[in-house]
Image 1 (cartoon, helix red, strand yellow):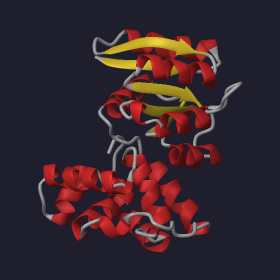
Image 2 (cartoon, rainbow, N blue to C red):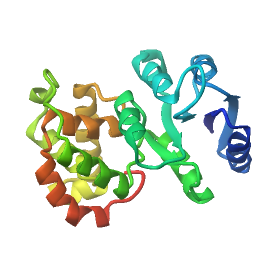
Image 3 (spheres, one colour):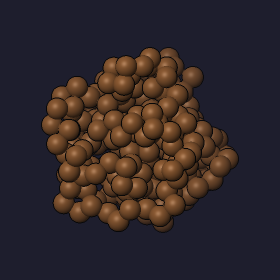
Length: 235
């Protein structure tokens, strides 16, 4: 059973999402919250598998709530998915850096919403091709300075290759095809890289790949033109 917490200050949004989730046999809504402070307290109390958190809320916004969840080792099993009305904007990058597993636009199709909850619950990132392209474009135009002490030196050559391909938007199966290894081995490389880089989840691993300099904006932008057509949501 996937246990979900809804955190949004709009009652209509909460009730709509809850109505969808309550119809599923494998999903249970354990609680609702109307602001970030209440949401954080419920996360700490209930330890849901997935916390769907609105970005903009009173008292504490979703990004700060996510940052606090990601910083608490006791909440490592909680996967945060941000909710937004606006799609790709500045908040999305802040949310990924804060530790969100991904984000959903509130006008998402019901079937895509349910799929996204299941993807997040199993610990995968919600990085659709459009998100990856926007992330690439952001770093092409405004490349960040390389992170100091990022831990890249601890990665094996195979792990670095796997992380770079993940940053291009490839799934584990596609990484396996590219490196001529099994999907299980590709997943192992990604998981070990996440542990070494202290990345909470795959989404944060992708952000680290850009910010550490492992993936250069130019090379990723060029290669993404040939890979985004093969990527899919929930890689």
